[in-house]
Length: 432
Image 1 (cartoon, rainbow, N blue to C red):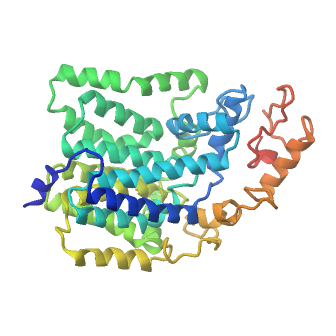
Image 2: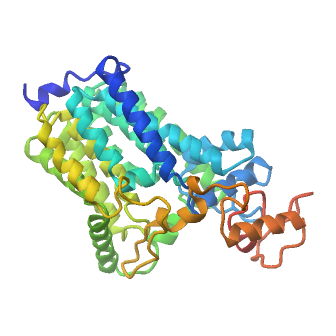
Image 3: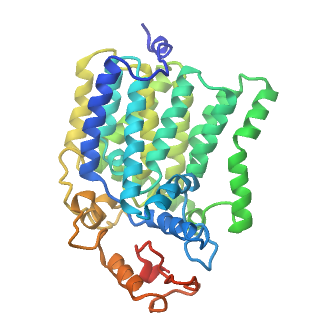
């Protein structure tokens, strides 16, 4: 049976039989991997402190006196907010939510797989990919992005879902990170193109209403439609050719650290463009568009992070097309590339610190912060998460209102009974 026909056999039913068996094993293995590598990075605390201020009535902002959108992922912030409101604790709440979403992503891929071999091919790629594993926690939006992408692509490959449902899911992805529009809008267009224009127009208008409402709110509340970080990253004054050069360096750094991720993306795109199994070519073009944007914008300083979404899309292409066709030896390249990689989740010591920022401008973010913020390093005997910034923040909060001596202009500590730092103590002594 050709690959294009295999896709038609995919159903959206819950895993049963071999799917249940593989799902249980994959979830169990991935749970151990995540427990071993879980961490929360410093960038996550831009969001977490905003949530803390919001929950405590100081506004949806980093500093109580300044309306600035210091986070890039409104939907991720909305997902974390009720959990923080219930627990009052940022670290373990964020790690728990991230792990649950990441496990659901793997389970959903197995439920989608048309055969055991397609599942056994796709899931190990993810579990052996250092960027996927590293950013399955971290406190950033990647776990939610991955789950939404898998749901969106399941509908794409099976032709399921209404135009309104497609639009809502695409809207959710863009609310989670606006540049994900490059990955999903081409697929949404191919889906809506087959519908009467009135149906498509109504679906887009209603489906993207949450994003429209958010942008209006952002303009009124913050004064800008996009996060502050977008302007800081894209309006740097750096020549475009230099940014593109750095973007290619980012890809080369990914090849050095984790060739499995890059090889999987490249192989899936080539397979889709050449063999053309049903529904795969639009996904391949979307991957190219997104990776092209990453290169054009200069990449990222976090090694591999911006390649996680393209990797998930590539794995969905391979799983949907059932490329192995039941051939066991096809798993050997995956095992070799994954286990021999510099930052393989299997061989890498989870307690090692990563390298400092190199001349390439790209750093192993999880490795750098894991010593102080890794779940395995939790101890009741020391401040956790650790680090001088956190310790200073705790000490400042214990001294109470008015004790801060390193505040920046715009710091507001006027709320009764609350110091300038807020209860999110990451860098609060120097960033408030």
